[in-house]
Image 1 (cartoon, rainbow, N blue to C red):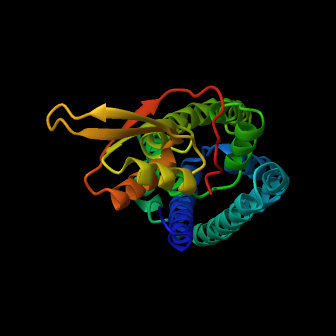
Image 2 (tube, rainbow, N blue to C red):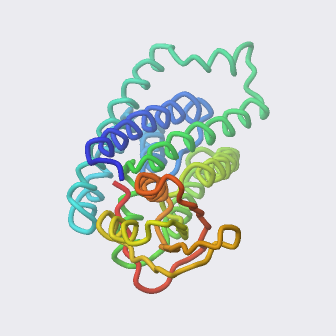
Image 3 (tube, rainbow, N blue to C red):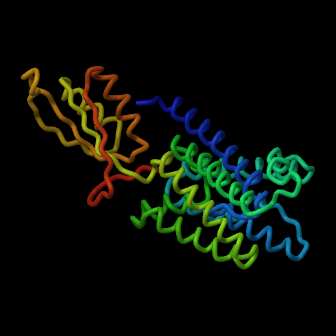
Length: 302
C-alpha cells in the first residue's frame, strides 16, 4: 500500500492539477461561450450573471467561496475533518485560480477568444465547439482530482455526506443540481444558453465516466500461493472484508488460495500494489460491480 506521505503527495498533486484544468475550462471556454458549469460553480456563474443584469459586477469566485462555507461544515461534521480540510484547500485554489483567470480575461487575455471569435465567427458552430470543449476540459479537470482521491469541494462534499450517512447515490444530487442550473440558465441566458449547457453537461458526464471511479465498486480477486500472508496484509491495510477459499490450479495441479473483496474503484490500484509486493506472481482480476447491498464500508475519497 502507498505510504501516507506518497498518498498525500498524490492527493495534493491531483487536486492542484485537476483544479487548474477545471478552472481553465470554466473561464476560457464556458464563460467565453456564456453557458454554465455544474454544481456550486454553475450556481456561482448564475448569481454573477444575474447581478450583472443590474450592472452589479461580482466575480463568481466570491460566490464559490461563500456557497462552500455551509458545505464545509457538512463535510466537517458528517464525513471527516481531513476530508473537510482538503476540500477547503481545493476550494481556496479554485477561488484564486478563477479570480486570476478572470483578471486576465478582463484585460483581453484569453488565448481562445481570438481563435473562436476572430472576424465575427460567433455562430452556432462556434458556440457548439465551445460547449464541447468546455465540457471536455472541465470533465478532465474534475476527473483528475477525483481519480487521485482529492475532493473538489462543492457537490463532492454533499455526495460524500449523503453516500455515507443516508446511502443515497451521488448521481441523484448531481443530476438534480445540474437540472436546476439548466432551468435557471434558460431564464438568465436564454433558451439557447440552456441547450448548450445541456450539451456541456453530457460531454462532462461522458468524460467523468471514463476517468472518475470514486463512486463505483469493483470485485478484487487475488490468486496466490501466499494465502495467509496476503489475507493478513489485506485485513491490516484496508477496511473491507475478505472472503478466502482454496482452489486447485488446472495447469500446475498445485493448491492456491483465492481472496475476494469488494472495494471502491479508486482503491483498486492500492490493492494491486500490495498484492504484488507480497507475491509478484499473484494473479489479480478486477470486475465491475453495479451496486452493493449489505455491510460495506464506504471510505471518504480523501
